[in-house]
Length: 109
Image 1: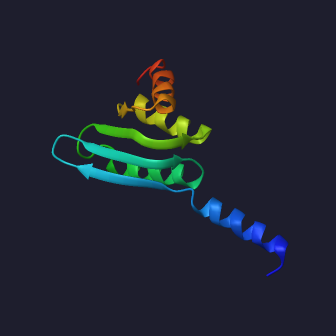
Image 2: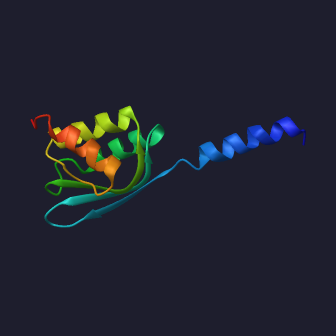
Image 3: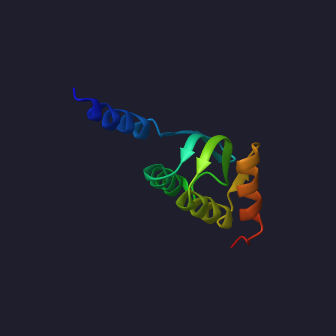
């Protein structure tokens, strides 16, 4: 392989490492989404689809952001939309706490 190609391969590997793990727990009182990784790019749509499938089903929604390492603008917008529709957002890191506080300054529907 030519030296320049390694940079392309490395770039591709780094991009493919950007993932979001969504663990869903549903009980009789609520649905909880536990997020790990980066809420960005195509993963925002994945979370949105998970949320849509459970909306109106088993009561309130809780979103745990404790293991989220990055949130892009689309991710922030989705979290704000979820909050406006009654979701509880829970964070413990400096970045995610700041994002949640900013979202909570808005109003719920």
